[in-house]
Length: 177
Image 1 (cartoon, helix red, strand yellow):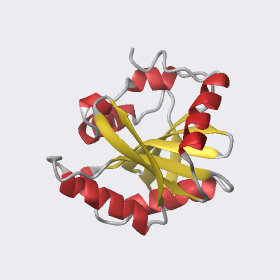
Image 2: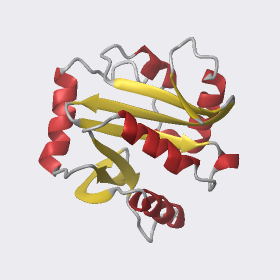
Image 3: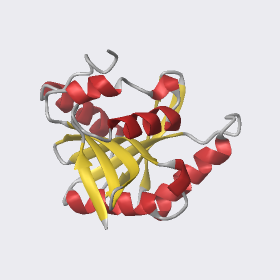
């Protein structure tokens, strides 16, 4: 049975989470995990996933209004391809009824060295019910596109989410520390 744990600075699995986070995401896409753990608005949720006592993955999301934005998601390398990713996505979806779930992926591009990985990642999310939203943006020198589950999302709605999130007291201030 899949078990979800909300991470705090005192969580016993932080070393495993940190190792997965640092290996799964390129340095230019990462923020300070310690900074995220100090975020005080309540909009940021850092989740770890277990099957019995075995750590299987992490998911970090931001919540505001009827949107929950998955900003980081990874399954431990030795368990990839075994259905855990889909199980985690379903658990998150079931735990957030009525929410639109959104996530960003690196935009597939034949010029990208990891284009095959980008295409596999996009196919994974599409197989699990996510759809293209048509929203695209650039961040830290990389092009991204937004996928959505549970409704539609316009570019205006995406930027409204970020504006409302900041109005609610959420801040990136500690994320770089």
